[in-house]
Length: 135
Image (tube, rainbow, N blue to C red; front, side, top):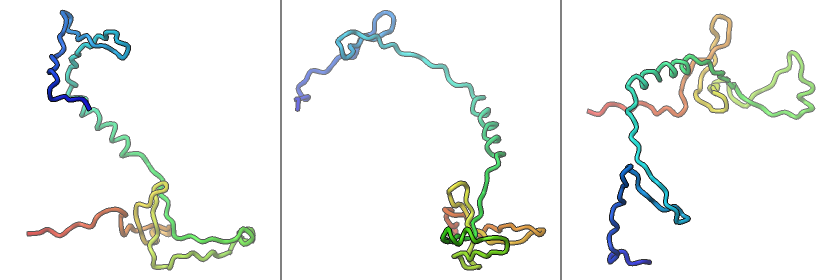
């Protein structure tokens, strides 16, 4: 390990009349390094980005509701027809799982609204419960 305590301090690089600092590249050839001043970004740029966020907020995303699952042999699958019943592994009181693509994001109960199935969200997965105020 080299002894740097007694090594002479290097002097700062000297600029030439053009404001460039000569430096050597890996081949020993001098390379010109020049400092650049960038103008400040206009303030209106940050407010223009909110319109792009509105586009995302208006996007529709598919949600899948899973009531339960089961596994059956292919032979039994081929025998299914109208009126066949598949028993799922979940009990009736268990919540249905809501998925956004392949990620579960909520649990809900199945309800009927205007003669259509619907779900009432009971819990958002990953949301921490609110802590009581201390005081």
